Each structure stands twice: as structure tokens, then as C-alpha cells.
Image (cartoon, rainbow over all chains, first blue to last red; front, side, top):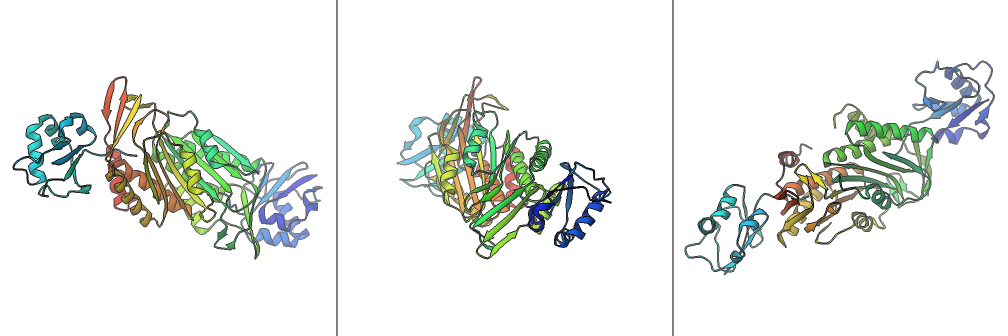
Length: 84
Length: 84
Length: 153
Length: 153
């Protein structure tokens, strides 16, 4: 299983069923996972493509889409931030 | 009578008796008054000469030592300020 | 340095009083309080919702505060940030810095606010009579953040 | 705009709370609190005395605040300044600005503090175990004031 966390406006278009899923077949990297998500959830895919999206793996910033994804990982998808 | 107000460090060297005095003979301007004070109170005169002194007449800033002094005036002597 | 997220109404003045209690060694306190406005450029605001990513958000804000603290030699920093549902008039964020002299405290609070606007993992959604919208940093926020990064300010 | 001198201990947080009470139209509050330190470059401080010139001091501080208020389009300014005898740990000055956006509030408070340091008719005398000494603005205070005047900051 992997845990997916969709923050801000991504949370509005991500179905609740995506929070915890089995690692999809063929998904080995963050890039694979993002492509898989865009195919499964076109709305979410478009929302992510339309803005700068940062990916966080196990609470650490992922600097590269080639970063591996493994069973047990938590991956968060962050749209541009607006604190303060 | 004129009222004299000595602020900050000038207050430390000005005798209390100077707070209210008769307008001294020959004193027509702020410059006259300052010279008279320096003669009467050398300590005070030296303190004023040693620093930037601002003069306030009837609560308004005096921009010039030629400004007249008349009976009933209140003249304040201000050393450099240190608020905040 | 203290960094805290809270989903409850907080009193910025009480927080500031606690932060400075008993401190007679630091003469200068600068604080910023951001409050939920009843109306913005986008219209009337009935409610603000702030999303966060538990764990990560605290960690990132702490990292930003540590960077500011080092840069301005200002160890005494306080950050309190609301998350969740917020009503107009309620405080959203408090940033305070206590320092021996005021210039560093001003710069520390100002830049930490710039950082929070663009780099804190928080997401604001404003709701009003015309619906809800997610807020994104304004161009001027980014410009300020870049200037801060380069030491222009 | 509110300007007040007081010879009593005041609570800067309570003053700030009163200043902002019920305001849900202005999102940004910046405040500065200057507190009497127990020790300065000049040594231990047992007491601070601040002289003022009744009437004139209030008038001049109001004039400085009005200038800042106009320059930064920031009508909501609060200044509270202690006069008389002050002990370490007690607040000396509070300057607060309430504004729609934060940049102007920061600038208003920062510059009003620069002005107060050099241009407010107030005179500070520090007393400690080694005697008493009058404080004069430091060179850096003057430099900051001149920069402010010229719009460099």
C-alpha cells in the first residue's frame, strides 16, 4: 500500500478513495505515479499540470521525478502555497 | 516675568531659581538671553555651547537667535533628544 | 524559537505577553499579526479555510524560522499559525522577534512573513457569498521573496 | 491616530488589544515594543528617567506620527510613550500600525521608531551602580533618520 495526500486545491478534485491504494503495477518512480494518476483521474491530472506541483515523499521534498516509489511510502502533492 | 525651561542634561546644571525670572535688562532676543545666561551661569553656558541646543518659544520651535523675547514668554532649552 | 500550529482561536496579545514574560535583557520586540479580513479584493469573506500537511508543515516553518534566526542573529522568534476554519476578525498568524536592538528584529519579522507567504506549506481557501476560491501567492509576494533570498532587502 | 504619554506602567499587549478591538477590515498589525533593559553597553541599569516637555512633547510626537501616517497612507497608528521613572523590564514605548497590507505597516512602524529616537522631545537618563548618564542618539540613529528623511529606506 502507498498513502497519497492531496493538499489545497488538489484535495478538491482527488477522490477520497485515493488516500490509500496498492502500488499500481508498473509504477516505480514519482514520474510513473504522476502519469498513472493523470490517466486514472483526468481532472486531478489537469489540475496538477496547470500549476507548479511539488512532491513530498515520506515528509521529505523530492527534487526529481525519477525518485523511486516503494510500498509503504507516503506521497504528498502540493500546489503553490499561501500561508501567512 | 519670563519662564525658562531646561530639559534633559541642562536641567542638571540650571538652578531652580531660574525657572521664573524678570526679563533681564538689555535682553531683546533669544541670542541676548542665551548670552546673559552664559554670563550668569557659566556651567549652564558651557553645557549649551558643548552640544546642539534647540530653543522653543511658547511651545513653538525658534529657528533663529534673532527671534524676540518679551515679557510673559516661555523659553525652553533642549539638548539632543533620545526618545523611543 | 517556538513554532506552533493551532486549529483553535488564539489571542496574539496573550501569546506575545507569554513570549516576552520576564525578559528584561532584550529591549526590542517586533510583532506582526495577520487577521482574517471581512472583505478582500475578491469580495466579502465569510470563512477562510487553511489546509496544512501535518508534520511536514511544522517542519518546514521551523526550517524557515531557523534560517531567519541565523541570518539576523535573532534566536528569540515566535510563530503561531492557525489552520482549519477561520472567521473574519480572528488572528491567522503571529510572528514575533525579541532582540537587543530593533533593526534586526524588524528585518527578522518582515522576512519571515515574506517566507511564510510563499514557502510555508499552507493553503488558504476563501469562502463568501459568491462561492469559494483557493488563494495563491500574488506576484508581489514572489517578488518580495526573491528579493529576500538574494539579500536585497 | 492616537498619541499618549504616560508616567505609569502600561501593558503594551493590553493597549494593542484595545487598539485593534473589533477591527476585521485591516488584516495587518505591526507593533514595536521597546522595554527598559537591565543592562546596556553602559553597564547595569537600575532605573531609567525620561524627561519630557509637557505639551510640546505630545505635539511634536503627534506631528511625527502624522507625517508617517500620510507618507504610508496608514491612518491607524498608535503611540504610547512612558515618561518619568522606569525600572528594567517595563515597557518604554509602543508603536503600532494597522493596515490592509503588511508592507506599509512595517515601514510606518520602523520609520516612526527612527523618528522617535532622534526627533521626539524626550531625554533619557540611565542610572546604575556607577552613577547616572544622559543618553544621546547614537550615530547609527542619526544615519537611519537621515536615510528615512531622504526616502532611502
